[in-house]
Amino acid sequence: MLKIKMNKFDIRIIFLFFFTLDVLSENIGQPGELFPIKVNKGIFTSSNGLIKIDNSYYKLVPLSFSKQGQYVMFEDTKIFIQNKDFGESRITITNNALVNLSDEDKDRTIRESKIINKALQTYSKKMKPTFSFISPVDGIISSRYGKKRFINNSPRSPHLALDIAAPEGTKVLSPEDGKVILIGNFFYSGNYLIIDHGQGLLSSYSHLSSISVSEDDILKQGQEIGKVGSTGRVTGPHLHWTVYYEKVRINPESLLKDNYLEALL
Image 1 (cartoon, helix red, strand yellow):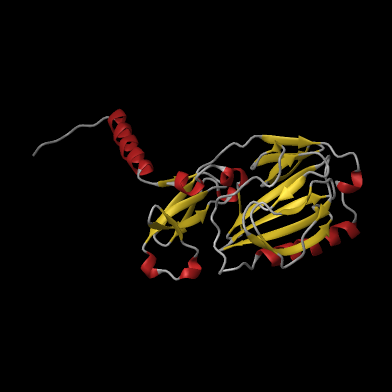
Image 2 (cartoon, rainbow, N blue to C red):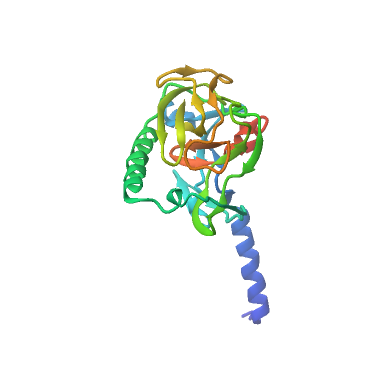
């Protein structure tokens, strides 16, 4: 009988080898991005939001920022969401009433949050997005997606949107065809609207100085929806642009890439 003696170093090397193979065989994605899973269209209905890329069909799985270091599942496919350091953003708000809210303002924000969340729960299954976005405003990115936020040196929720600074009154455009499903004036967001692009893809626009569309309006890509402002809780004029896919806030900046869907493969 052949006996093989192995020391602790040998065992560590073997363990590392198989661990590396296992990691390399995994589906790994970045938080805030969409991960394409190739599927057989025949076993899905048209309402499942399948996307056709290069003559094949894919399900786009949103990778939540809050699930970094964890796995998400689609059918029998497991996707690992990597941890990522997005940096931090620190702002100072001198008006203390906008930082430490009164009971009245707290009640208002709770009511408004329910209104917004309700709107985000429903979307058209008839409209189909192209995922070929244009930038909604001509400006300078002032805060990117995923940054840790500190207001007056106090930690707050991460910044899961894209801030684009531009002069007051700069036109804001619809980045994709869609339908306006909510308009309001809210404590945090100021003049605000949500666009439904179909199949679970929605986008919202905060701090507008004015809104030039109405609820239920059908929009074309590039159509003006409002103007940049500084309404709500802000430190200056900018657009706070949020994109949701299947209720998960994803990175808007990624959708501005040329040939975005093809780049996912």
